[in-house]
Amino acid sequence: MLNDLHIHSTYSDGAFTPEEIIDLARERNIRYISITDHDTLGAYGHFQSDREDITVIPGVEVSTYFKGKELHILSYFHDPKDKNLLSLLEKFKNDRTERYHKILGNLSDLDIHLPDTEPPMDSYGRAHIAKLLIEHGYVENIKEAFNVYLDVDKIAYEKRYKIDTRDALKSLRAAGGIPVLAHPGEKLYNLHFEELISELKVYGLLGLEVYHPSHKKELCDRLYAIARKHKLVITGGSDFHGQPGSPLSGPNNKLGRYGLNDYLMMKLIQCDANLKKRTVNVEK
Image 1: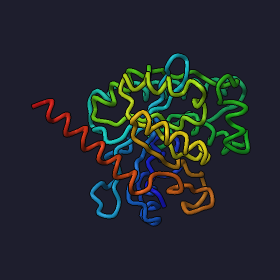
Image 2: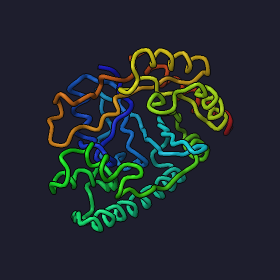
Image 3: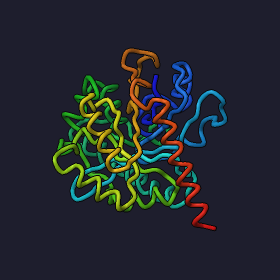
Image 4: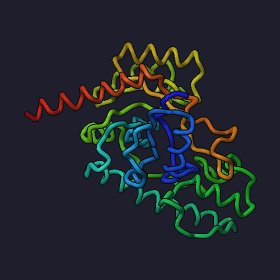
């Protein structure tokens, strides 16, 4: 098993609680993990953090837009209690709540009536609505829910709050984080990819997610070379969400199958130590 730095819990669109995720990581002898919920740090402070056998690195995945493109920015080692970062993420939460109820209203207009109740862990997202559609017999699976109702430009879709990537990078760096471009192979990898990397570095991008389920080995090798060329830290993870109703150790569980080996993990930890040391010296 590898050190897994891309995991989602019930505080965004994952199926399992932070404690369940930590128990599974322990079962698989994973030493380092990071819970990187979408646009929220809600999980932090709600699980036991002082463990000898496993380290949970503060993480988050922020949805941003840059020149018309949607970019997801992962961050690691930031202060989960940073007031400015929490204020930014509170805007996301308020928007998610409003968007959640708008989508339920759109579905109601289509004679699809779902209970307008608070989801668990404040996970106001399309994934929770998809689960409700399944539970009430309107669709058979999450893929169908998105393809028919919830995906971009589908009949119940609602736009969400947008933050400029440059502002997100600034906020994450100010909170002591290491901002990383998430899963670039899904939509971003093209002839102009290195230009994008160079431009984002100016605003605080420090890393690249090389290892991800959507990246085949050849692409991982290319992204690794690009990260080294541009002096970016390398990260990776399974993008684990879990499957509702399935056992934690079931066949759909990718936890620990994608991520960083111990050498790259130590490089990332050293990067954080160097950044914090540099910040202390500047403040002096």
